[in-house]
Length: 141
Image 1 (cartoon, rainbow, N blue to C red):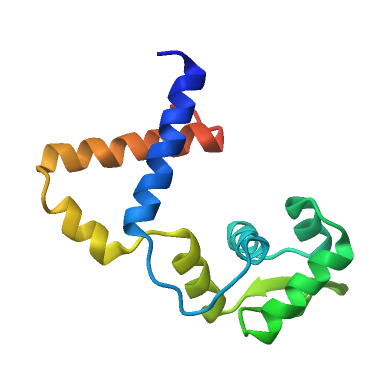
Image 2 (image 1 turned 180 degrees about the horizontal axis):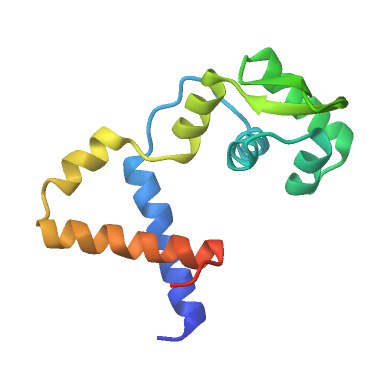
């Protein structure tokens, strides 16, 4: 199989796994808001300029997204302890839960499904996803 065909197949499979195993959402969010939350989660803390760069949008658009996320209690802004001129955007506990709901899988449903396969199959699934994640992160395999 050619590499591009493999990439398309993995993308379709990933999408289908998410379709069957996505959790219910407590809070409705736009796609850009979810991407902003996920970016903040992956970086630990960031600023509006970095969010704008990640979302490929204007800084005022990113500011508006952050403002709405703050209103929903999903992020907070705080001054950086070592340089109070810098304002960081961080996830709240509710924001962490929202990221899991909007980007993760329903762990209970997945557990039920994984109980239906053998230990060896479960290990193979975990190994395959782990290997893909290493490649995506640019880590050595």
